[in-house]
Length: 397
Image (tube, rainbow, N blue to C red; front, side, top):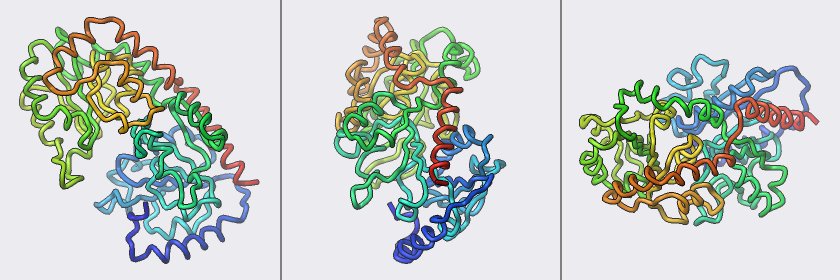
């Protein structure tokens, strides 16, 4: 968890930094503008932090951002090239700036963060980075509440957690009373936008230059060996090539698959990109996913957030095979795998497509799960504003 700062300074920062931070932050400050620190450990977290800022930016807040070790190009010393560029957000260049200032609130989208600097002194808000399905404790729970969310003393790391899934919020509170006040059910931040765009499928197909005369099938894959493109393999593209007169295909893969992340796993991003040459539609990393999911009739998904987004968009779903212990038993992914057709290999694609397109029940099933995540954009904004105000007010007491 502390790898981002470099091992040789770990001892100094862990003890001297924590002492300085507590000395500065233990005093109450009455003021009209409150300082919020955004901790961004990787480029993929930028959109989640910016979404938070957009919900509360009308309030009396001043925003700062510190970049973690997921940035290898020196972006930690500038905002240019990030989603924060052009916004009223101040970058912190050095680590000492982070623990030598008074903070009213620290906001984190991931668990990779130096919690020991501020735990018990400054309110910590965990906003997450999607709809959590993946499990790191063999299915007992999801990532956001797994082993990495506790410190070495077994204490939960955050003061508040924004939970988009109604079912997970309820189950976590039932399982452990400490979560009663920690977990704030908010609904999913893009749910309102997805609902508003859900009737524009034909328009989005036209924008993406996809023919209107056949069903559109999209593949949204995460990363790692259990993800969609690794499970279905290169043969998937051969099957799609054979079926291209019957269906239009869209491919989208996680940004991590565009570079090496494990010496034992060959990234598939380059192979997905090559499908453009065959006339297939490919979503680029960082490109808005809404046009692609809205243009689709069927979404083939794995355990990623895109599984839940496909349901919110009311799409018929096919689930690529993954181990049950890969996701939490409380997750939406766990339930969807038991509801929709499961694709174990590329050769089964044609029959799976026929099944979900010919049986009306599968469209109705998607609607049943939407309530777990839905919230209007207006209500979501109000919830985030209220949580922020209450956490900062508690800090001032």
